[in-house]
Length: 447
Image (cartoon, rainbow, N blue to C red; front, top):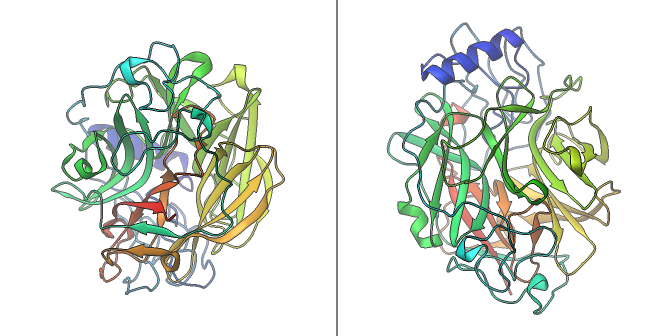
């Protein structure tokens, strides 16, 4: 959506809010937020056609741009081959859907240690992590560096295990994508991008335990795609950042993230002019230390960008971003950037999606959110280092590490790493990128 003209933005917002089916196109990429990236090699071809979209980055190239009220479509997607570009339509979620209930409203207080986060209704506290990450059974694991138990070094090589899809799109939808996940008040809370037969949208769901994700109610929301959810401790607010709207990135706040209709009015998180190449700002993430909050985002152009503000000024609009110093190609440094603090260490972990014969993640570390960032591994999460019980996906695509605390420091426990991700049937023969049948998957670090 970031490549559209302001008039197309207005059409998008009007059609989304009204729940109409007219469509506009968007940029290349993965993760719902973006739309035409190919899985196989190659280079970006084409640029921006008037009112249209860029060519897919790698392999297949989008055909055409945005026609009036229509969407561009690329070629077909073969098994393990290039993902075809099809353009995003702007419609998406409409009419809000039913409101999810449950979940205690954060009221301050401290995070429970060594057990479920926020049990008894207490709000997550900043800084210290809360006793380990969410385990496969859904409850928080005991121990972890924040809970006074065992600490683990961050691995330099990774091996994962995974079952089949954890959740599939509800009836009428064909894709679930771009997951952001927190565990709070004994509930998994997931916000995500969706796609039905013609339009992009967004949704959320809650569930008690991973096996219950398959039957959890997927509640449509009426704003944004590619979300980032966290609890901002200094002001005791839940923050949901996303793209698609009147700004490059937007945010809303709430006292209860389980209430899909309880979010505040939309405000600007970032609204600076686009970089001269790639898609412009895409797939934002936010993380804070004790003094500053940082915005990082991708550009589908082999660059990762960053901006910062004083923590006392957050939430608010970030100033113009600068290049983070991490550079590559549109293939090996694509999008879906996420950053975490590593419990029991002074390190930060960044993961960024790459694309080859399938989608996968690379990883970097730093000792300061300002950088510099050092490559940790080219194979953080890739089909070749995952043992699947069911061979249902080649893609390990846009997702979120399971955090040991939902706060603004984004802590993860290296003793208990898990990654929620989007995967899909590699044999799906679909011309429109939005119709690729992405589902929710879960990786668990092998020990």
